[in-house]
Length: 320
Figure 1 (cartoon, helix red, strand yellow):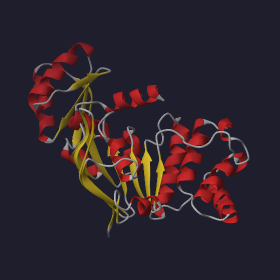
Figure 2 (cartoon, rainbow, N blue to C red):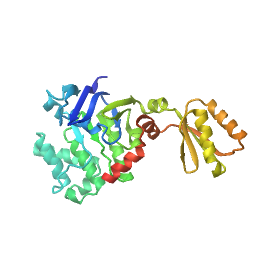
Figure 3 (cartoon, rainbow, N blue to C red):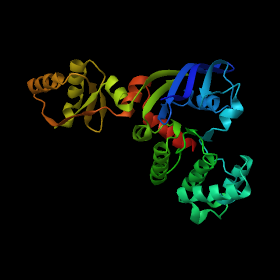
Figure 4 (cartoon, helix red, strand yellow):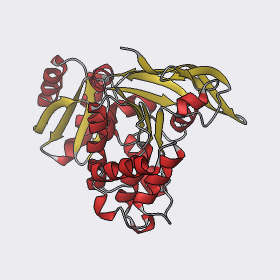
């Protein structure tokens, strides 16, 4: 299997800010790569370079086998791009937006209309295709924007936080569309701050921080590498919560999280559970609830970057 996207040593500066600092990426054909990271980590800069919108200061990249700098025209003919905000012409109808893009891509008027009708049907937009885009809801606009990026039947699709600001139902609808593209063999690079989104869709994940890739792997591999399992323990008496926290911290040699009357901490050795229970029993502390579960991507994100992804998601929603 070849690679649809390859980048090596990508670097980009804006004044004193180093937006990218030696980024390497590889995305096999037909795979979906999820790119995670805090605001300002360099995700969008990487997408803009790979989509030929920005030149790197250092390093290089190939998309669909073509150099993004020297062969930018060929790259553009083979990719689609959906940014953080819908880029459709609000004065045009849904049909007119798609036909216009088809004509710009060299399709005849009849071909462009057939392509537009097919995409409107695929994205459940046929009923509103004759309406001006300015009358669309946020979810409908995002679907139209994604449809627009597919007019040229791209081999590689860049989705830069495509569901930001959408309600849960619209977000889920778009997930279904992306899964359909994966089934058709389209290679997708998805940047997102919604970790559930990455967990649901991504074959592989890279985590950016301060312009660098700090971790990569499948979702399951990243979860295993940063803790594997998570202990959740709730004492029967709220007054014992701090005591439980101190015992868990001592036995596991970590800093537990305390929230909603519960102590949560990553753990690697199952035997540590028995040690914690014995220690609490000696102290006369009774556990009302004790459970083990797999680490979530949110906990992976926290372990790798020092930030909770939920905070980043809230920032993104506020900006939207």
